[in-house]
Image (cartoon, rainbow over all chains, first blue to last red; front, side, top):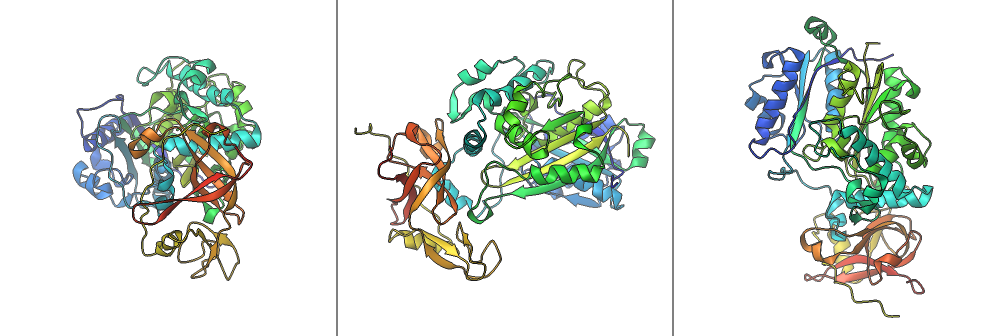
Length: 384
Length: 143
């Protein structure tokens, strides 16, 4: 048993989804303040800081701006899965005695603000860009088309993922899209890139979120009801020298590794936050994590299993990226925060999973069908 | 039957660098160069100065025969930038006869006829700078 002893003692999701009146740095500060207030801690307590490469000035710029002097810094960049890696790395750093209170922030304004400055493109991108890939949906469409051909997955089954997300989002007053939708609604929405329709795609939102990962004794002193970090893992899938596999992601490696590290089994998972950039992302991830057999993710989604509170595996009870929030076009942080709410019993009563004790969070960053980072976290209501 | 005329796809200018220059130079002669490692004998794509499978230096160039099948594809209905007015167009992973899966457009066909497993042939579109962008067309007998 290798639980880290670290606890998520504070979590905060920015309530707004369209924010033309704040800088990206301001949003980082606002979510940091929100998470610290939730934890009953102050910026002066922070001795670890983690952020992605889109944070203005990176970890250095943010530390200066926030006025903190962390002794542990991490800027792991794996797209929308970065924030899961940050939580895992913070937990390891706490276990190693390198910090006691780690602040993880993320924010962005893809709806109303400038595009973030990125580093040099991947070497392979110089070849891929010639084919007219102009949006992420086209990558995931390649995955969905192959999944349909290999396993008989249908557009209706993919749509069931969106229907579940919308059913949950109607209870989230902050969600961008709160209107329930039907399978027919998804299929009737415009085709963006075959076989994915507009309603197979996540929302584009401004905003952000933050979590505080702290040592167990800090958690005891603040009295926080938290999410104990029981296990974590990260991995990458890529084009493998020309042998890209479109129907298996690195979740097939991170899921078993995180579950093993946590000392739990999959059938103990009461709730899961599954990265849902597109409906196909959920279907393929559920298979790779082992919640259903490879190829059966479509029927699994269509069975109603994903619906809270009574489905066999309720997911994304905030409405997920498909309906609630995908700030900075990176959904990892809101997915983490909803898992914390579930473990605290603070999800909306209509979607709160009764007795939620073990939760899994999975992130898929970058882009499937080229390069993608996978990260899995296992949280427990109690330490192990 | 003659297919209806389709809007021409943009022909982006490649960005050869210190490592990929030989690949792009070869496209001037109509060649698509894969790489075959002398050490592990595996064939790789895209080109680099070492074998991504075993790490051996300077894998030898291997001229692709130009035959492949569609491994997956999508018909892009909504695009941006220079590609916005080219919709609908097909982006596919084509599995070459030599093994590697290459991301490229399928052209000279009705997008609605493209399917997984479809045999295709290599084709080139010359760029303003005299390089050529690799694409695929249906093999004879296909739609």
